[in-house]
Length: 292
Ligand code: MN
Image: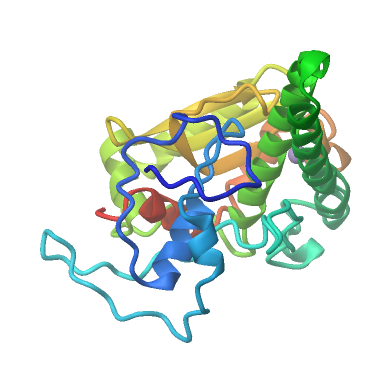
């Protein structure tokens, strides 16, 4: 992954995700899906060839299925994930909710969803853009101002992690979601292999979410070296791991559940399992590993 056309995102050299298996992506749909799907926990993201993607014409329709090297035909092209998280000018943007505020009732109440999305998430978007601008100013000024890099980098890590994780969180949920993923989907097959069953995964995931110390996240992620699913606890949202592609995240910061569940985080986590959008999780997995 040598292309680094995107000028607007602070990506440390060498912090790209190994093992993503990014194809040449001849068709715009696949390319946009890969571009949008390459967010990595921890605020480090890889957006290969963004400039060329932005210049691509919109695909009028989904391309026909292509045959994989192993002879199989994928069920469908990966859906576009993280849509709306970056605006055409390269600034981060608040993606619109893919449903109405009340659509996740009774599991997540409308007022919490509205405040969480419209206020908290927007704050991360604005903070990430401000941190990037501040880092640009520091680089430009040089000299003694370089001492300000730490504070601006901290702000970038906190806000960019918040923006990317919340973007995933909203699309990870849907009305009438939950239950196990489809048995023959990529996520369903990998979950069976790596956790034994949906029930075993759900038990571990909910326990991890309930036991995060303070605020943070439980993350189902795809570890791209051994190519396996792992469940992580991410404390304070910016203290996260850069070696997984996040697939499913449950926000356990109090603002995600306090109005309805008060101190009962476990009840909120249990409710979250009823709104999981496995189609989105599956699309993220297939974007991370198109050969599966
Ligand atoms: Mn949150």
